[in-house]
Length: 192
Image 1 (cartoon, helix red, strand yellow):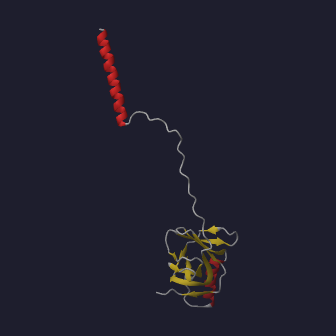
Image 2 (spheres, rainbow, N blue to C red):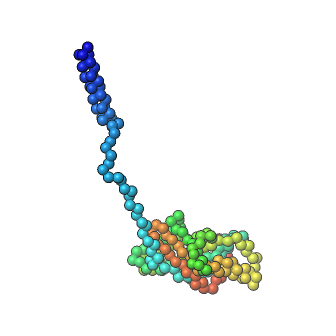
């Protein structure tokens, strides 16, 4: 009987050895802990906004008919590229335009402000651009004193509370200031 016990112990040890080897081969065996805890990857800070690369100078304001029930107050500006690199300003999700409130200097996105069209501003040159604020507006039938007051009220509703606009080009990290030094406005009808 003692020999059967010896054979049983040898078979049991052989089975345990085989099972342990199989577990190591398929990767189920417990792994040794890492010697050092892993640290999170460093967070990269976004580059600061460049507010000196492109500068805006106000040129004029006009009211433009979109259709008989809508008008756009159009703010024209000259953009000066102060860099040695050409700059393309295009409509899209990377462009955010906000108004700056005159009372506090706070930025506001309450009104939708749109870039009229894309612009190319060559290095060390100027280009004219326009910002539009669209409103519901019933166009008067004739150019009368009443119509002129209505246009002026529409414009003053946009400019009376703001110190200008700020455009953020998120792709280039440009902050473009459009100050409020408004010259005389005039109303025009939309061209077809």
